[in-house]
Every structure is written in structure tokens, then in C-alpha cells.
Length: 132
Image 1 (cartoon, rainbow, N blue to C red):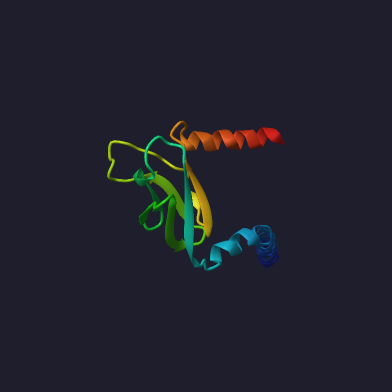
Image 2 (image 1 turned 90 degrees about the vertical axis):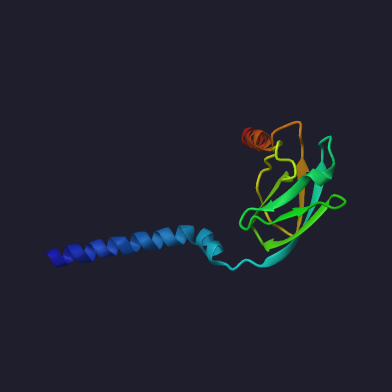
């Protein structure tokens, strides 16, 4: 009798594992894909009253930073890794917390000093939720 219970238990565990893999495989397989290093071109839309030179892009994984030149910043990073718009460390008394965005070949980041980027993201998300 004990042997049948063990076989039944292992069968249940196997079925559970198969069902779980079936539903989560698309998400899991993306985690195992090797992401390419890409050249990311970021266009800055500056809605602030100060010059673009105060802004930088920070690569979250490595801490690497790049500056804007004529409203454009270029950085080589792994596709999908997070990039954030921030203020240059040359201005330690000020802070600008941009929302991390996944890296893709062509991006646009908006510097809007009239609203907190995080609060704007929350408001945009809420608007989307109420649309449906």
C-alpha cells in the first residue's frame, strides 16, 4: 500500500510540474535567452528650464553613465537591460529620478521638471486602467 501512495504522490508532482512549465514556459524561456549587446541611441526631450548637459543616462547593471550631445546619447548595453535618466553627479545638491526603461535600439526619454517621473508613470498607468 505504501508503494502505491509513493507512486501516486510522484505522479501528482509530475503532473503539477508539467502544468506549471506549460503555463510559465514563455516567461521562463525569455530568461534563458542570451541577450545581445546593442548600440542604444537615446533622444532627450528636455522640458526642463536648464541645459541638456545636466542630464545623463545610467545603466543600472554596470553603473556606466553617458552624457547627451545635441540631445542624443549613445551607449552599448545588453538589450532589455534598464537605463535611467538622471542628473549628472556634478550637481549633487539636486536630484532627478527617472523611471528605468528597457534598452532598445532607438529610445526617447523625457526630462519633465514640472512633474515627478514616477508620479507621471503612476498617473499614466491609472489612466490606462480606467480606459478599459
